[in-house]
Amino acid sequence: MRRRLVWTLFPTHLGLALVSLLAFGVFAGLAFRAAHLEQLRDDLEARAGMLAHRLAEGPAMPDSAAIQRLCQGLGEPAGVRLTVVLPSGRVAGDSMDEPEAMELHGERPEIRAALAGETGSAVRLSATLGQRMLYVAAPVRHDGAVAGAVRAAVPLAWIEAHLAAHWRRLLTGSLAAAGMAALLALAVARHVAAPVRRLDRFADRFARGELEARIDPEGPEEIARLGGALNRMAQELEARMSAVVAQRNETEAVLASMGEGVLVVGEDERIRDCNRAAGVLLALDPATARGRPIGEAVRNSALQALVARTLEEARPGECDLVFRTPQERFIQARGMPLKNADGRVAGTVVVLNDVTRLKRLESLRRDFVGNVSHELKTPITSLRAASETLLDEAPPDPADARRFLDIIHRHALRLEAIVEDLLQLSRIEHDTERSGVPMERVPLRRPLEAVVAACRTRAERRRVQIDLRIDGEPEGTVNEALIEQAVTNLVDNAIKFSPPGRAVRITASREATALRIAVEDEGPGIAPEHHARIFERFYCVDPGRSRRQGGTGLGLAIVKHIALAHGGSIRVESEPGRGSRFVLEIPSGEPAEE
Ligand code: ADP
Image (cartoon, rainbow, N blue to C red; front, side, top):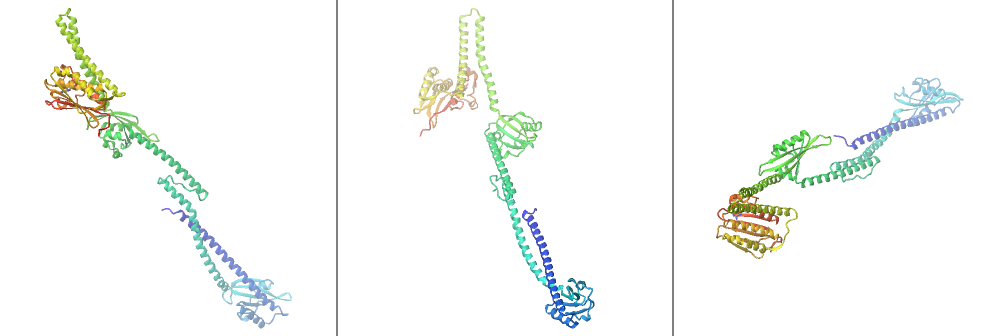
C-alpha cells in the first residue's frame, strides 16, 4: 500500500529538524567547551601571574622552602596545582609534590615559553600525576630578566566533570526541542497535506458521479488552481452528462413511441436493446431480452442470417420474416451496420415493420378485383350472347325477340345493381376515411318505419309479415339514409330467406350507450363456419341461390361498412334450421342513461 502524503512529509521534516538540532547541539557543546577552557586558561594565567608577581616582589627569587610554601598556600585552597621552575629546569616548588623528587621541567613546552618570556599553555598527560592536565605558565621577572617560570595546572577531568552537567542540560533541552520539532513537523506535514486530501475527497466524489459538488478555491495558489481546474472539469462533465442523458431520453422516447420495432444487436450477436414494438413483434420481453444471443431469443433463421450478414458485410440488408404462430404474421426487417468511433462495425440495428395488414390488404385487393371481374363477367356474357342472337336473327321472331330482350334487361338490371352496390360501398368507405359520414340526431323510429314501408310490397308478395317493435322512443346521432339502407339490406335478406307465411321481426332498443337494431327471420339459418365471412364482399353461402334471388353478395358488406362508419358493429346469431338474427349496434352518441 502507498504511504499517505502526511507520512511522507513528516519523516523528512522531522529528519531535517533533528539534523539541525544535532548540528546545533554539537556546535553549541563544542563552543561552550572551548569557551570554558578559555576561561579556565585565563583563570590559571591569572593565578600563575599572581604567584609570579609575589615571587618578583623581592630583590631576588625567594629560597626553595619559601617558594614551596607560597605554592602550597596559594594552590591548595584553590584546588590548583602551582609549580615554580627555575631557568635551569629544576623545580623550585610544587603544591602537590616534593620538588626534589621531580625531574627537570625546563623542556615542558609551556615552561619553555614562560622561560622565554611568554605565557605558554598546554594540555598533556602529567607524568607526575598520571592524568591529563591543562597547564598555563607565566615568566617571573627580576630586573627585567626571566628568573623562573610559574605554572598553574588543573586536571582536565575536573573540567569535563564540570562540563558534564552542562552536557546533560544541553541534552535534556535538545530532547525537549526534538519532541517539539516532531510535533511541529507533524503539524506542518498535516497542514501541507490537508488541502491535497481535500482535493482528493472531492475528486473521489466526482468519480462517484456527484458532479454538482464544488471545491472552495482556498489554500496555496497551486492547490487553489488545481481545485479550480477540477471544478471546471466537473462542470464540463456535468454539462456533457446532462446532454448525454437528454439525448438518451430523447432516443428512448423516440424508440418507445415508434411503431416500428427496433432491435440493437452487438457484434457478439447479443441483443443490446429492444423497443416495445420489437418486443410485441418478436414476442420478446424487452426487459429480459438484453444480453441474450439473438439466435436464442428469437427463433427465426432469416433474422439471424440478416444480423450475421450485416455484421460481416458492414452494409445494409433486408429480408422478410414469416412467423406462423400464434397466427401468420409477415415482418419486413431492415438491418443497418452500427459503427463505432474508429469506423469498425460494433453491431447492427434491425428495424422491423409489421406488413401483415399490407399483405392482407394486397391479397384482399387481388381477391376483390378477381371477384368483381367474375361477378361482372356473367351478366356481360349473357348480354353479349342475347344481343348477338338478336343481331344474327334478322328479322327476329317477335316472341324470341321479346325473350332475348327480357334476358338483356334482366342482366342489365343486375349489372346496374352490382355497380350501384359497389359505388355505394366505395362512397361509404371514402366518407368514413375522409371526414366521416354526416350525422344528425334523429328518432330511430323514422328510418325503421321507412324500411317497413319500402319492403311491404315485396314481403306481401312472398306472404311474409313484417313486425316492427321499438322499445321507448330511442334517438341517435346517425346518418339516417345509411341506417335505412343497412336495415333495408337486412330485411331484404330476411324476406328472401323466409318461408311463406312466416314473420320477419325488427326490434330496436336503447342499451347503455348504444342503439341496438335486430332483424330476425325464421329462414334456413346460416352454418357457423360462414358467420365470420358473410360480411365480406361477394361472399355467398350458396352462390347459385343468391344469384337467382338477385343477390350481389355485397348487401352485408354494405351493412358492415355502415356500422363501421358509425363506429358500431354488426354480428349474426344463427344456426341452420333455426332462423337468423342480425344485430346492428351503433353508439347512441350521448352519455349512458341513469
Ligand atoms: P346477397 O346479396 O347475395 O344476399 P349478402 O351479402 O346480403 O349477399 O349476403 C351474403 C350471404 O349471406 C348470402 O349469400 C346468404 O347466403 C347469406 N345470408 C344473408 N342473410 C341471410 C339470412 N337472413 N338467412 C340466411 N342466409 C343469409
